[in-house]
Image (tube, rainbow, N blue to C red; front, side, top):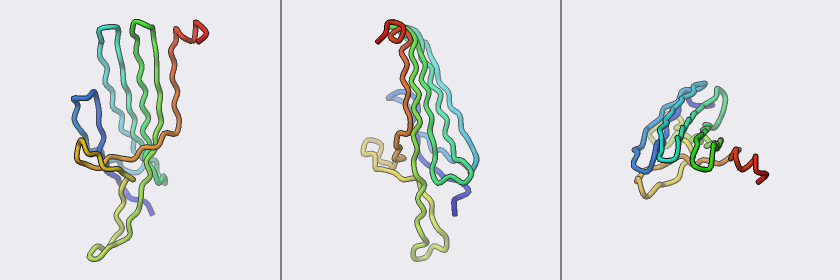
Length: 131
């Protein structure tokens, strides 16, 4: 049995950005995008959160693209966090589902325990130079 929806905390943006509580229903994807010019070029970040129908995990894909003084680059990472079922306890009559988490001392909350599945890094000019 899987939950109809799952909730978890996520952090977006740079160091000064805040936290966001995300709720995903089964089969739902949430897309987030941020981009800006920098002193050396530009940077664009796309994040997708996905809770596939029938999956016992959530997926986060992050694609960062940009260009700086060393030329264009990109990084793509896919991570997953398991969904855990806690059986009914004492007065509760139904199971509770939560994302496997760890305690984040800095923010004083539980954050998803993401496990890396895939990662790709590209530095276009370095590839052309044979590095």
